[in-house]
Length: 301
Image (cartoon, rainbow, N blue to C red; front, side, top):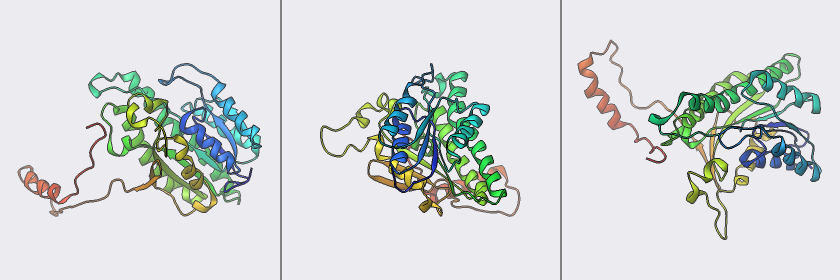
């Protein structure tokens, strides 16, 4: 299997189903050797099964590619280290990390429980951090040894993390954190030959079929814009050597549409050159708000 990722080694987390599955298959089609990570949990994070990861590995091998399964809990710091170590032990190197794993426990903010909040942030945000941390340590060691990597990290944010989503406070907070983490990591890891970008995909998965059933439904004919496979070619390109000049970006993907998110930018400002008086804040701040662009609507508002 040869393509734009020929000879490269990739880890894809949450690769047993949905978007992660399609990413793993596409990276393999493009020539990458893939570590297929999946804990095999239910939609809300319960239970464990090696089946989904093993199935994806079988598909890749049947097509002539190379892949191994991994059942690590990527939010566990030690297990995330083991995941990175497995890739290097199995294939001799690591070039690509695609952070995709996660689950949802959607609630309106006033109904959310602390354990639900913590569980979502643990897997989605901590899981991105832990795998990146250990992969980055490997790439830094390689760079310091004179073997400059040409490494790629592709994180998974969301429109919910960029614009917010009603009923998804924990999910939105985690995805917003991932976008910010991507910006910082891109700056810190660039010296070691690592680019770090994020995608914000819209696609039909276990997590979206329930709350957004109508919008995610496959059409009877024509282009299925919510097919998760639509997202994976962009991931593959971002993982390729050709994307070496692209870093610190968030790319929104929906069907055939690709959009570069511009995120938080400095807007209208006033500098008094002194401490503000409380009574004068309102008038000036209202002027600035009138000059500023209107925020995009929160999803579900």
